[in-house]
Length: 404
Figure 1 (cartoon, rainbow, N blue to C red):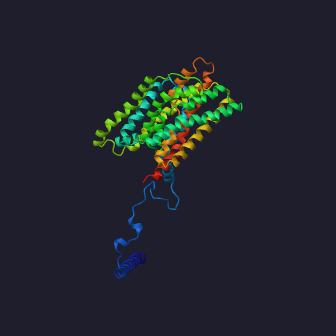
Figure 2: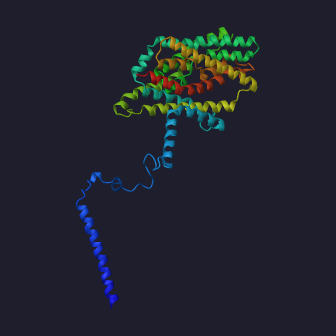
Figure 3: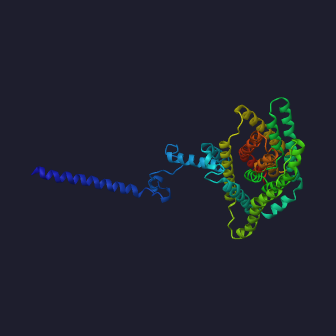
């Protein structure tokens, strides 16, 4: 009986002690000022962190694996965006080297239609959509700049080419057939579409490039046969009608269509904010030309010994580099703005394959070394495209730095 009485007494004692503690705590809380909600401990207000942290760094100050992946992806995307054309050229050349038959003339992609017509017409259609008519009108009256470009392309380059080739021929370092092929290449006018696309992707004056692409090829029909007769001793009859037809259908007509479509599309807001898209589309068409050109180059070869080919390539590359440097310096001496200087450099130093190959076939028809005569031009064509593409990002930065 005593034990049964002791147990209730112990329970009662524990209950009293708990009551005293509660009362004491309540009393102390009564004299302690309550913290406002805004000053409450932050840990009590925050919700639990998500499973994948999105904060700038983990709790120890280091980025999480997901953040590192996002940073790397953003860096790669930014690099590809800034170097789109340069990366595209490297990719196009690599793909052409991997399987040349795919993009050769007569191949599955039919470049004689998709490239010669589709890509060329597309480039000038996009130029017509992108360029205000006032820009083309301004370019048409830039007589001094046109004289610089055509004089450099059709007079200065032939002169330096002939002097250099004669010096190498006298030293026994250049075969007579290669000398004639180099001279013919130097007498050719500028390219039709390549100079325009490169000027645009490099931040140059696209309207001036278009005007000189047309003007240069018209002058080439008249001047090149005469200069060939004086410098090589042979002359060929270039088909003026064929050249005019190509310029009209592949250059002027798509350019005109683009200019006619520009006002209604601008009024409908279709072109607003799409300048970069138009530029990327033009560059992509040029990359298609690069791919097709190198497919033909890798598949056809040059038909000369490797040592001779290496020496000729070094000569052609050195001559082209000197012409690029001279054109850039001439633009500086003439006081041209960066955009015009870029266009002068890229347009005045290019030589057309589209006009050159038929011309070589006409002038040197029946010669057994015709393949050797064509080799300098076959080297120059992909070389000038590759060098212009490599220079494009640097030239674009120069144009952007001068822009107001």
